Each structure stands twice: as C-alpha cells, then as structure tokens.
Image (cartoon, rainbow, N blue to C red; front, side, top):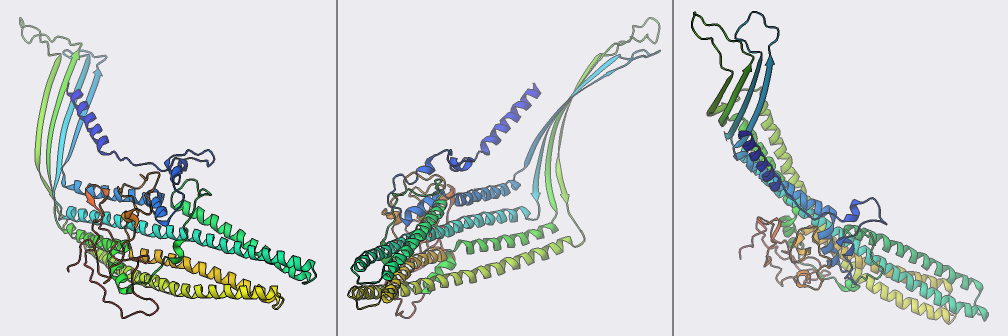
Length: 580
C-alpha cells in the first residue's frame, strides 16, 4: 500500500514537471527542415507574397521582422535568458526530496550438524521511506547578487534582440535599395541601347545612300553591344539583389515572382535634417547595443559584489523524516528440548515484523576561515573584469558617436551630390541632344556624339547611385540612432516572431506612416509605448521613435545650415518623457 502511494506521488510529480516545462513555438518553414529544394514541403512561408503586387520597403521590413530565422533565434534566446533568471529565484526555495527503497534478502542453512533451534531458510524484507528538506538560510547575499546578475543578463539578451532587429532592418533596407539601383541601371542600359539602335538604323540608311562611311555603322553596332552588356550586368545585379532580399525576409522560394513590382518614388523622397546633436543624444539614449554594454557593466558589478560573499558563513536548515519496516520469516526450525524434565519444548517465532519511524531537524553552518588568499585574489580578478566592462562601455559610446556622425555626414553629402548630379544629368541630356542633332546634320564628328552619349550615361548612372545612396544613408542613420524599435516594423497585434500572417499590413496603414518632425525639434515620446514582447508579464522598452529619422520631413536647410540648435535634454531613462 505504501509503495503504491509513493508511485502515485512520483507520477504526479512527473506530470507536473512535464506541464511546467512545456515550451511551444511556431516551427521554422517546413522547406528548411528538408534536404531537397524541388520536392520541399510548402507552408505559409511560401505564400508570403501571394497578395502583394507592389513590394514596399515597409512590407519587406515587416515580413523580415516576423519571418527572419536569425531574428527569431534571437527572440528565443531572450526567452532562454528569462528562464535562467527565473531559475535564480529558485535558490530561495527549500529543496524537498523523497526516497524509497525495498529489499529482500534470502539465506539457506545446509549441512548443519549437532545444532538445534537453527532455521534452514531465512528471508528478510525491508523498506525505507524518507523525505528530506534542505533550506539555505544565509550565504552572505550570494543568492541576491546571483538574481541581479541573471536579471541584467536577461536585459542584456533583450538588448541583443533589439540590436539584431536594428541591424537586420538596415540590411533589409540595403538589399531593397540594391534592387532599386539594379532597376535604375537596367533602365539606363535600355535607354542607351535604344538610342544606339535608333542611331544605327539612321546611320545604315545614310551609309546606303553613301553619306557616311562604314566605320560609323560599325561604331553604333559596337555601342549597342556595349549597352546590351550593361543590360545583362544590370539583370544579374537585380537577380542577386532579389536573392539577398528574399533570404533576409525568410522567403523559402529564394527569389520573388516576376510580376512583383517595386516603387520608384524614392527619387524625390529625401529632405534636410535637424542638428546632428539631436541624433547624437537620441542614439546615446536609445542604441540597444550600448544599452547591452551597460547591462554587462551591471553584471560585472554584481559579480564583483558576489565575491565578498565567500567571507560569510553558509547556514543551512534541514528536516528529515524516515519510515522503515522490517519483516523476517524463518522455516525449518528444530524444537529445542526443555531445560528441565517435564517442561514443554521451546518453539522460537517463525515470523517477526517491526516499524521504525524517525524525525530529524537542525541547522548546519560552514565558514571558511582561510584558503590561501583565493578569495582575495578572486575579488581582484572581478575588479579587473569590472574595469574591462567600464572601458568597453566607453569604447562603445565613442563608436556610437562616430557612427552617428558618419551616417549624418553621409546623408548630408549624398543630398548635396544628388542635387549636383540632377543638374549634371539635365545638362548632359541637353548636350547629347544638341550633339546628336549636329551629327545628323553632318556638322559634328562621330567621336563627339560618342562622348556626349557616354557622358549622359555616366550622369544617369551617377544620379541613380546618388538616389540610392540617400536611401542607404537614411537606413544607416535610422540604424545609428535606433530610431525605431522592432515593434515599429511589426504588425499591429505585435505577435511573436514566426507568427506572420500571409499578407502583411499595407504600407499605407497608420502604423507604417512616419511621424512628421515637430517644428521646434523637441523631444516627443510616443503616445503608445511598445507593449509586451517576450512575455505578457515583462514589458519591453518604450518605443524608440523619439527623433525624426532621415526620411521624416523637416525644415532645416543642409546647403546653408543655420546655427546648430541646442539638443533637447534626454533623460537617463529613455522610457520616460522629459520634464517640460
């Protein structure tokens, strides 16, 4: 009966442990788990673009934030860190263990001579049931520091996830802009080919009439072939850019449908910026990688504090309860004669049984008095680790400042160059047309027409690259200041990564529209901070959209900058609004 109860308790404990250890998550795309492409299993990830005809950058980033395997892995790494943090709290709980043993021992006696009262067979059955409770009462605050260490490690892992989203959004923007550049280069190559083809047709007619030599005909054929070569290169650039973007978006097909279109409004989508100080302050308050270094600094502090616990005694309390039974059975007894005549024979008992409950409790203390200066040197070691963490924060701080200034300067110079390239393109087009008219009239040499057309193609190519450079500079600056958190790119329900619906929310929805910059460049916190991310009980940092990124309109002129505006004061805690 006792054994059956013990089994019941054990089974219940196993079921409870199984229920508590359940961790469910959407699996990766079925195709990625197989070893074939043509025969791969298809699921929702293969239908991400079914209802999309025009892929905007917002759509591409939205899909990536929900479907990119690397980012999803970072999300689950946060959950793993949270579980380690919760495990640290378990040190405050007593440890309860139960044990049970059952034994059966059988012995036989053979070839016994001149002995009475000896059993031929003996069997002993014994059981032992015990419950042990141990509780760490005091350990010099080592548990407290351990909890704080794991708490900051958890926060550090969250910062890594946010930084993964930051860098991934920049990579998506770069890949997306590379697609746009390839489309522009393809357009330029097609226009060049069409011009050379038209010139070749006209020149062939002139050659047949004897107005021009054969070399002119061959010249335009060569130029047309060169344009065809550039067109092939643009097609290759487009394909490779598509492949890179599809990987970042987690699209198992590896490429996009041919009918998918990309917008062309990026050519006018740029504006001037406020003072660089605004971006510097925001970056230093918002950058998740810098926050991560600060969390590592806190970890190093508490690890150093924890080393002092080795000087304290460790006190444990214990409670033990035991219950054992013993059953002995004997057979083959020989009756012993009575000591005196007339008394009955002695027949010893053939079966004995006993039960032995026990209870024990108390306190134990352990205190290390001296261990060869191990504790002292360990404290020095962790103080050195603390210094490493402090200087790592300083190095990251300087790196953030450098990245922001570089991104800001990149955007400013890209805008300036674009305005010059636009003028150069217009002048080159006008010049080419004038030279073409002169060549057709017989007043201009063929070499001059080749130069004019080459200058126009170069001007078109430079202008297209400058437009893309502006878009890349936007992405670079947004990433440098961590202008938007992962929630900005996610769907309105803010579901966990891996739970992306087939059709992303349209880029025209209010959630994806940039917030215009205020006229006075003041710090405006979001009206609705980001909600929960990893767990319903743990709040994510507030939205980092505290500054107008590069693609948000402002009124400060770049070419003739006014005196730098005083940067707004950003509180130490970026999740709180500044005092007015």
